[in-house]
Image (cartoon, rainbow, N blue to C red):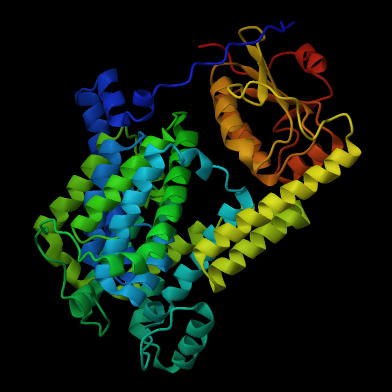
Length: 568
């Protein structure tokens, strides 16, 4: 087979209206009937069953009430799905926010936290309107893995007291370095009933995940713990004993107390909420894209997240963001579009209005067990170990972000991690410039409306894609989205790396995701022209034969017989 060398046309940029059109409108334009509604209703109910215990557990760990967690999931979840730029995004309270929200509640009270949530909503909406969502994608992969793992450690540490039923003489310290000695000093007050409930909750969740993955393991485990507590009269803390239960009503909207002094005081927290919310929501949307082959609109999504946070604050809720686990559940449950997320909010509202009294017997130890399980799953263990082995630079960025998240501050961890990643990139480029004299460090001026890649048209089965210049975290998102689109419509994708002087872990992760997706769709991936250093960097991430085929040149790749999927 031979291939031509004519250039494929670069698609026209979408208009402003297209960029900010909610996916709900897109889905309705495509045609929406009873069959689609049935799929969305089943998916919405499935997600609501998962979100019910999680929303309450996250709210309690954040220093809020379980009712506030449900209000957040109802209002925020509805608005995120109705206005968002992703077909499958599920919004609500997220475990990643526990650290920030708890610290804000401790420093400024619940009124200050709600005001910070309202302000964060305004900031998020402005980020979307100003089309700054693209810059969120520039955060290096080691930074996202590091702060996610750090948040998971803090979440688990925050649940040690309810997991063991410990009694502290005073309030529980917030910083980890102070928290652990205080908990260790109270180990003699551990309660056997609380330990049994927390261990039983985790055991049921893990067992059902393996044996019956389609069953709602978290809800079954929490309901079983509540039933055991009520039947045997176990002397443990419950939602009823600590919070007085959940009101069987929905609050009316109201503004929090607003003053210039208070707004200035909570502004750092609002910025932190907005920063983390934008990262989490876009990561979740990217995960949904990878599972479905769809494409989200990042700036439209951020506007929706902003409106959702403002709406949550008006009803006394806490921070809203896209939630990866619930979004993935929505996709796996067969959702057709955003209606499933809206119905998930409606089902949660029905629970509050009809069945709220049933929540009074839920033990806090069981909810702590749910969060312990969530924290374990938050850690990307394979990615963490891979980055430690990848290079000393990536390991340094990862560990710095991880350590600062645990012992200092999440915002500081992200800023420092991004700065270290940028310095590492400059260092690597300086080495490449010295050795690879044929590859210019600064390219000649070109039109700025042309991407830094070249797509070469082949025949109807094969497409060749050339990447020129450093393939690093700043270019990974845009190149990855184009690679995905090309792979969807061809049987073989040849990616030429001859013009790439170096590749970082973010870009390697992009290729790893492409290879996994291509394997699911039966598309053959061939990498050509990769230097020895680049092949070693890719191999660390598992990108090697037989997952991909390596060839010295494009011509050698085209000479190979085609093994990809057949045309439909």
